[in-house]
Image (cartoon, rainbow, N blue to C red; front, side):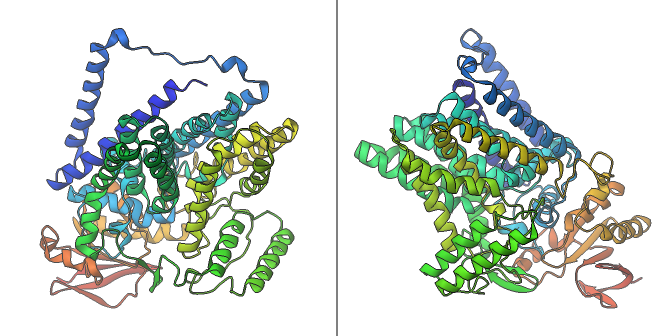
Length: 617
């Protein structure tokens, strides 16, 4: 497999990611995020690229290095075909499916609409604080898709492109560690078949985006460790900066790799390594500075709050205690939630075993000091939901390849260090983060990074028949998640090809469709151009935005009567000049009236969890 085009693809992705970041932050300073500025930016970028190609046309070669293609056997070609099938199928889902994951409706896409309305990513008053402080890069990219396309039809492709880029990146990492073309193909196949990855590749979550930038950082970081060249340091810095801007879990997963690269360079190059290492640090700080400044201005902490409000209860993201039993408990639970099977008896037996282990180590598997509110540890049924799906075969394969790796008598090169970084990242994750039943989603970047190590180990495994059986089982079972995505099914009576897009937004709770529709109809009949919004911290705000804008494209929606820390923005323009003619209340008690800016809004319509208040004449 030729490295040239693959490395060039990662460089191109870094340039695009950098442009998205810098353009969003700079335009935001002038409240100038709109169609013309974004279209102009990318138009100029395309023209500059074409001009560069024309000027250097004699040196440009559009070729793919296929020198190793003839070395691939039938099984490797079948794996490639499987990877292409998974990528093509998830691309179809990404295009036809409406974004409908809970987090997307609550804050991922809701924050984007506010940014587009404000022309800026500056903080604003909101009842859903996650719209403000959580890392925003994926939403930056989705916002530019939405602005250019005029809809959310392409937003799922941020994750899909991240999956595609990750598949390329893991083959390069495998090659760095000496994998054959077969081993590199194994890496792509193993990464492509991660169940959580398959489900997220067509969603507007951000874990695959984080995985891709983390893969880029590891690849270019290792390249920098070997070459010491500034171009690799720059690439590693950009990748790490965007990865952190995408998701906070990257701090944990990247830390062991960063230590490895840093100490290796200092050992190898001594003082001359300080300049490129400092450059990496400066790039990371620069790319995250806007978000750091906004968080510091609101919370007094550049990383944002250390806690979250869930169902009215304030919870810390981190554990309350940090002990060896906590580490063991969370390691067991974070591994076990990947092991669910379709068989109830098997799940119950595993459940009992893990509860017994917790008795031995002297800690409850549901200790409130280490467990998210209202969650209880169990090995559940196989899930096809992109918020909870486990990766059972991949988890068992990891357990299998670790002892195999140490038993192999071969030159292991840097692989032991790579393995140590993976294990350290997982253990820090377990020690620090409070256990949640949906943590398999946060583990996706680690599973992606495991794929080169698994592939390299299997590639050197003498029992080739066992390797092939393992890969066939992983590929075959992965198709279940491709075609039975719970949120965006490709088959069945509720499949995305035949279900109306407006209904798809409500797939997690279709009983909300009629109440939301009736709310939109009432506001349309009243021709209300400005709507105030009062919600709980976990309400589907984006669904209301979409449905209202189908009939009233220029409608303005702002959160009102905000009682949390973001209320400080309510007294600032343009929010202080917002005077709605209606107030919509979601997931909150419905009194007879609501008072806003001294005016009374009377309850006019209430059904299920959504109520409408109109201004009293």
